[in-house]
Amino acid sequence: MTRRRFNRLGGLVLLGTLAACGQSDEGGKQVAPPEASQEAAPATQHPVQALPIEKQRSLAFRAAFAENPVLDVEDGQLRYSPARLEWIGDRAVLLSQGKNLDECHACTGALAVHYLEPAGDGFRVTGAWPTLIRGSGYGAPPSEWNLSDKFAQYPVVLVEGGYTAQGCTSGGITLTELRPDEPVQSTLIRTIYSNQSGFGADNGAEIEGEIANIDKGASFDVVYSGSRDFTETWIRRGDSFELRGGETRMPIC
Image 1 (cartoon, rainbow, N blue to C red):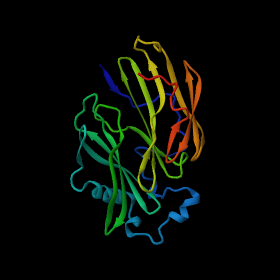
Image 2: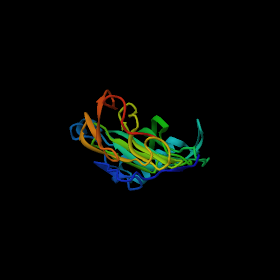
Image 3: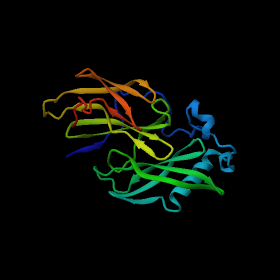
Image 4: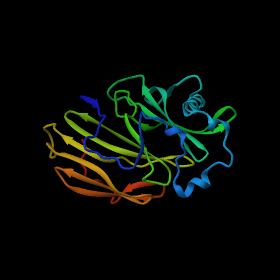
């Protein structure tokens, strides 16, 4: 099987993003919905919050990984580097990109999530999920990700990913809400299918999905076009989103 990392989902539009991966940390601004911002704001600011955001990110990364940014995980070893720090109320959330030291086609990297609180001259880790958000292959972490405040009460990490194998490409989006107790991830939203394999009933099909009609905290649609035109609705159940009806019409490789 030939398999390549899939870095870009053609035609996909992401709505309501706060900032793209690789940009600054937005000056360390707190991210919270207007109705919750006053309640979530700390009564007194800890001295660490007055530091430049780059220094905050460095201190948070040190608290998360100590002196060794390489972690043993289920499918290998990942070397992490700090990517982004966000404040949600009085909690800091560190996102770190982890590259798999093995770059085999089936090996994946990850985007780690750490929850921290100010302590002493830096931070103390209150929760760690080093492999919650996975990459697509060849040892790489997610390369297309950003934050959105349009889907839920708390910020959501949107990650695009996919793969091509034997001429067939599948891809989609994961939503991970950074809730106060722990991050909560919804199941994969399939948004791209391209079959040029020469095999199967869907050979030659090209279908792309676009997220639209977001009703914050309640639902959103995925509008598909190309070889087939249809719309599917995702609804909020508990702390995550689920596909209405439970089964997508989007083919997969």
